[in-house]
Length: 117
Image 1 (tube, rainbow, N blue to C red):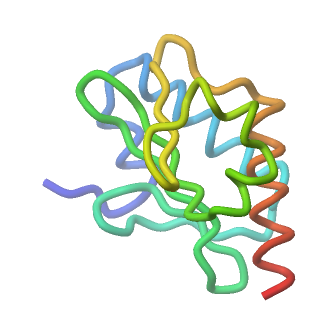
Image 2 (cartoon, helix red, strand yellow):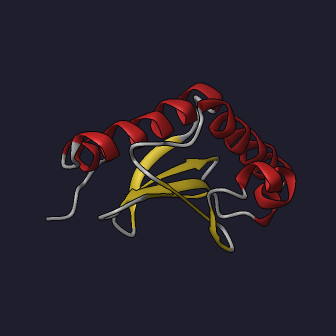
């Protein structure tokens, strides 16, 4: 069964990935309180002014953050290097989630990018 809401998605996860993705959710809410959340392509997705801000997901052995932006990679490249997996995908272990300060910077860069578009 596919989750209908972000809350449902998170509730269906084991403890470690749930905590890691709850941290992503809390950070988005703190940095971009006007962002909305939904499920898109089966993943928690956050939008700002109707535009994609970022998505995240839990997988069997890792969690991923999809900031959907080369600007994030350019602005924070060195900090993202340990987590970089593909063009716009960051992977991390649920037991060692992305640091809150780094998440805040990722969301802030995306907010600025959405605002300038």
